[in-house]
Length: 77
Figure 1 (cartoon, one colour):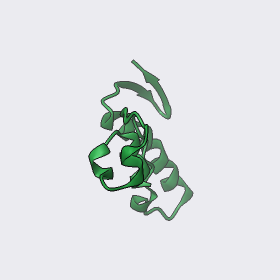
Figure 2 (tube, rainbow, N blue to C red; figure 1 turned 90 degrees about the horizontal axis):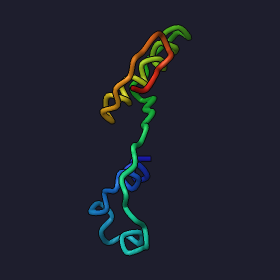
Figure 3 (cartoon, rainbow, N blue to C red; figure 1 turned 180 degrees about the vertical axis):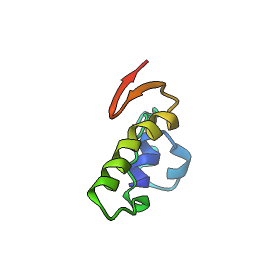
């Protein structure tokens, strides 16, 4: 998945010597939401729910998107 993430982020230099490098791809960067379950060490449904509730907030921070949050409801500003 990190290969797709790098391509969608427009990181063309990482693809030198690969077929996609010379293809007619615009390499325009797009925001990528990365859901990494490797860091999720929960043993109860409640903790899993809390883990998922934090994902939108952390992804918005990574992409410099300001949000107002109330519980699990997020509004872009």
